[in-house]
Length: 277
Image (cartoon, rainbow, N blue to C red; front, side):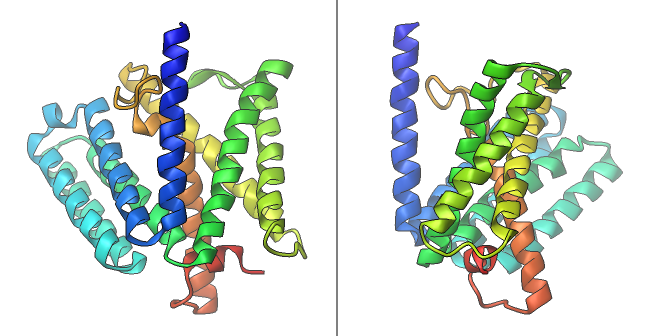
């Protein structure tokens, strides 16, 4: 048990150093990290859902989609990449409809593709992107950690017993409260808090991260697996580590894009739009 805990701690430290270092560097370094996470997410998704066994050609198309999306993340903007992702999703859905394949194929293409796009788009190149990512990290990590400890301390009714029996409503609420506090604290380290928008944003991201956690738990329970893979010693797979983060980034990307459409600020970094007063 001690050796397993030691391995988990070492792996956690390495992951934190790599993630925070790439986040600090931004630009191509963080884009490469985003692409790596997205590719590994698709690998784990396709493995869990057994896409290669169910539909080898469809799974090959899924890998082609990830290759194209990865290249666009590195060399193009989020808006174009999102349109291309939508095209791949539509083609894969049509493929499944006509050939009777697995609907987990378009699901995996969208989930993995959005993972890379949302991470890279929010971070961007500037300092505001760094602040936006730190803001999201703070919300997600505080939610995850405090939900666990609050749930253990208070207990009570289960949040979703059929999906994740260990999660409670007390943990979910406690995690959300702490996520909001952490997000507001990061924001106030750089800006003045003038209204309720940032606390509401932090709450939306906290809830989204918990939905992401439940979503991955549902997939693993659906296919009878404990971990998404064994890629990370002591931690399981990449999806096990980023499930809440990617859903929070999905929500952040959607919120930022809605603001882009409503304000016409296409050339403004998404991180700036997300945190703009």
